Length: 77
Image 1: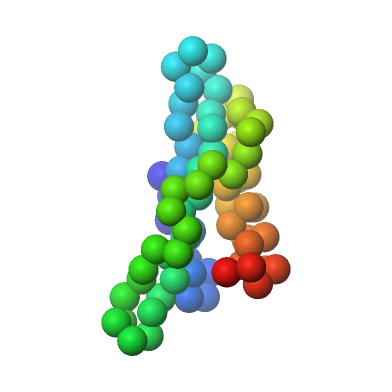
Image 2: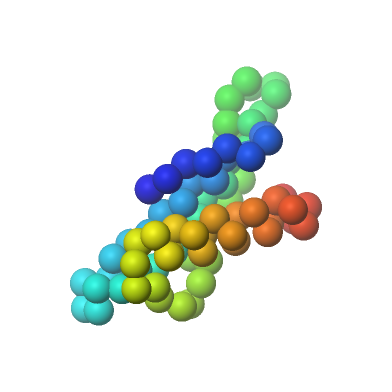
């Protein structure tokens, strides 16, 4: 798992290895800093970001990162 902070958002980038294939499946959790409580709170629970499976952990993490950045950039959150 990797955690990256972008402004008030924390992206928790997760990849799980699938035992039957050895490929990797990307997931994303997003936390947003809440000024009232002075802490991060979860706004997107662990969410699978692709039906596609990846050959490496790094590829899966990169895909989760791109999905998280897209959500932030488009203002969906």
